Image 1 (cartoon, rainbow, N blue to C red):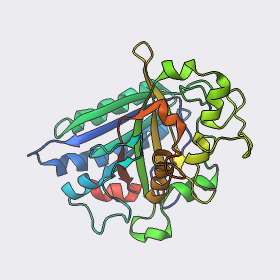
Image 2 (image 1 turned 135 degrees about the vertical axis):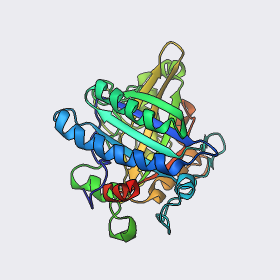
Image 3 (image 1 turned 90 degrees about the vertical axis):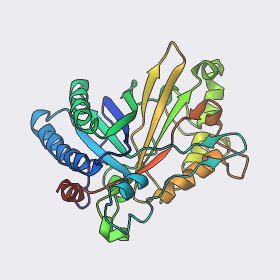
Length: 307
C-alpha cells in the first residue's frame, strides 16, 4: 500500500457491512468525529491481533459536505465534490446524501457485528444511520444475478496503483476516492431471460466467466460499457445483499480509485451510453437507489483528525 493507506486494496471477504451516517443538526459533531477516528485505529489494530485469519478491517470515507461541516483541511482533495446525478434517456445514476461511510469486512460475521456495535455506540450521539447493508459472498464471488463479479479488478501491485492516490495529489497521498451505489435487481424479470440472453446482457459466459469475443459481444453489454480501458481501472469490492421473498435482492457497488474521474467516465458510458442512447442493458434489471462520493484519508491523516 502507498503512504499508510486505509485497507482499500484488500480482496473481498465472506461478510461485509456497509453503513452511511448523516450528522444531526445543531449538535457539536467535531468531538464525536474525533472519537470515531480514534476508534477506527483501535479496532483495526485489535483486528490484527484478535483475528489473524479473519482479515477484518474498517475503512471510513468522508463526503464533501461532511468535510466542510467538520472544517477539515483545505484545499480539499482535488476530485472530492458532491456527486451529481447522471441522467440518461431511460436510467439515472441518482445522487444521495451522506456524511460518513463505513466499509466493515471480515471472514467471520461476528466480528463485523462487534465493529458495527462499537461505531454505532459512538456515532448515535451526533448522527443518524441512513443505510446499513449486510453483504455476503455468493458462491465463487458471483453477484446475485449469477455471474462472477469483479473479473476486471486489478490484481497485485496494480490495486494500489489504481486504488490509492500517489504523487498526483501530494497533500492527500495515501488517500482514496470511494464511490458507492446500492442497486436493487428485478430478479423475477432477470430469471425469465434464457441464460443465452443473460450472457449477452453481461458479455460473459455464466458458467465459466469467459468474455465474449469482440465481434460477438453486444455493444450495450455490461462489460463493453463499464470497462473504460486498461489504463483506467478501479478497485471494486461489490457484495450481494437483500431479501429474496420480497424480490429485493441487490448489489452494493463500491469502488476505490485514485481518480474519481475514472468512475464518472464509467457511469456516463453505462447510463447515457456510448454512443448516447446505447446504455448498459443491465440497467433494465437494476435500479440505482443511492449514489454518493466519499474520500478515505490515509491512516496518518485519520490519526491527525483524532487529535
